[in-house]
Image 1 (cartoon, rainbow, N blue to C red):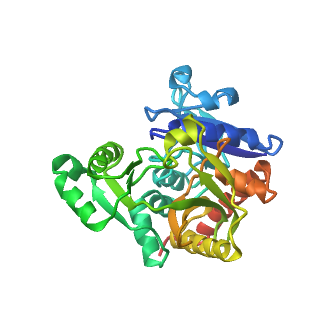
Image 2 (cartoon, rainbow, N blue to C red):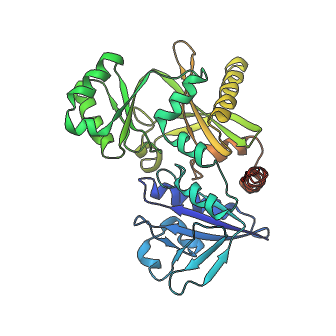
Image 3 (cartoon, helix red, strand yellow):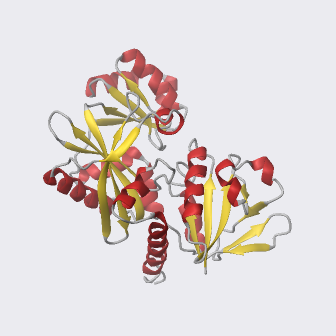
Length: 359
């Protein structure tokens, strides 16, 4: 029996999405092979567990106030009760499914590295650069991966003298523009600007979510996604397409209004599919990713140009999430997919610890 610590929730704006992903993952595990210990991180940052399997999707801190737990950032694989500091669970591997800041950005991965425990997904470096859209795009640009024109600014400038970043943006990019917090996912804090007034409003909204903002030129595109699975060697799925229910694939159309549609993109030419897979592999390796990643592309409807949008190093596992759907289309059911992710986590841990650390 493999003991899995499933960590979800967190302090980011994607808290609810994480709960939905965790519920799907918990339900998908083969309970004859895995003992799963669900750990909920509240918006306060406090850790609680074990969370009842029926409470994962609706986890609330007030219902577990007497079940606060902790881990220690030192070698060891145990969870401890804060009531009496007794050991309550010893894990073999951690499956983190906290989307966004303090979970997907390398911070939680750093704690797991200190614990010297295997975990699912990318390491500290891959998680951090995959999360930061500006750094990610700068790295991929150096690897000749085509992208839309973009610009990064500091949120502080929006509050101190917004005219300076406005002038810089308008001089270098063409409307329409998409304005995003640099370190969030699930379309949180993203808005489209068609003119100067829209841009001012969108910058102020994004500045409330992160200390840096990325601004990208908008194009008339198809939104294509592909799932990646692997460590040193990467396996790629078929492609899926997002058909937004609003002007773009925002948070409400994803998770609230249920107006967006996802489908298998089975009409892509062999040349386009081959190039998407090539760029996916280049990006996966350039960013030092591992485990599982969803890679998002644009295809310009007028020129058929392929542009990488972003990578998602902890993709959603909700009922509408593309990552598991694309593998299901390849004949890999959720139970089998989770088996492979656990195996990749163990393999990555073994490979990393193969190297000498002391001189």
